[in-house]
Length: 510
Image (cartoon, rainbow, N blue to C red):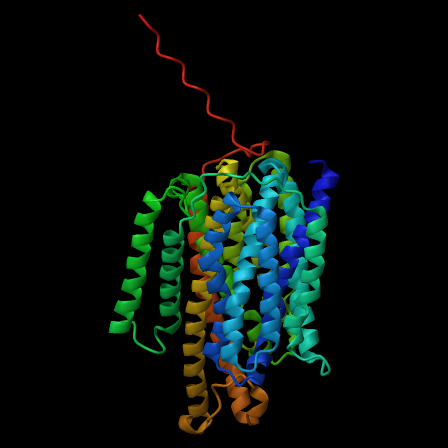
């Protein structure tokens, strides 16, 4: 494909990616107001995020494998329709339970869109040239991530719109992308007569991951770490995944080809993606909550305050993408990005309810630079090692583990934050001479309904507790640094597919 043809196809693909990403970021800043309006709790706050991540995570490898077997364009169009309908349903939700359920369906579409866009781009552009186009990808990610919170905050602060338009606004973008893709996307479909879908493996993987993530969400709150519920859910989830692994080793066309993820580079990239996902998703989800509840800013102001992080993503992904294409080397940029990400989270681990915004902004900038240099390049590192016929499964595997890390990160860090906040509120009420049992309503995120003394105590508790979750994120990001240091130095190939192995020479005859 010529550069112009690639850009025409990318116009629709990047708009699809923009729609999927903005659906998460546009809600991030408005979530405190949404949960307050629906009279939700801190646990439900976390579940609104976790539900979509859980659905996306559990189905990502399935979408990736389907992309190897069927029409990529048709799968993309189906996922767009799923996303459009679920976005409308989220906007009409009447309580937090409905919103969480519809967000889970929306996660199916979000996960499909994110993996299918990567697979289709990889099917059009060679790994070496892909670094150049990853700059455009990083730009879209940055615009969606910066524009999302700003747009979400503006919608939430506009009385004649309201928070429901945070979901409705995705519909026109989705419709436009559907039209653009129909006109510009031309991806050859290789029809195979021997297609066998591994339904059993897909079901077991989704079930095992879901059970473990539900356990992570509720442990420590609804039941203790050492309890029969923990033994049943953790043991059951692990047993299901062990069975799934056994099934995958015997399936003719497995959902997750184990021979791919056993190799050194894919295995290390998956480990790094797992750590980066836990740190990035788990940490950044709570920044909007920190600025609004811990510091008292409006949703619009909270969105503006996240700009340093998104500027870091935009600049670093664009520059590193072009340098990767120029040199063909990828390890130095992944290692550097992982180190910078760790330093950024280390800076955020020091914040409390009075920390200077300059210090917070500098730390967020480092986080953004680290994400921009590492996230897409980890996917590229795996795609470089597999043939075209396994591109979807390999891309799905790394995206799956990154999303898995993000889901676990949000669940674990959300539980830590909730416990820290509860302790901080109890201590604050005690110091103020207010009976803890009489501080009713302190579990709500609708601070406007609380009297001023209790409101100040809640703000302080949230502001001081946030630093603890970023300290955990620092440790998780450090695991990613260690994994990337063991990467083998490789040069990106400049062909779409791996060359066919040379035929073996016949043994000499005597």
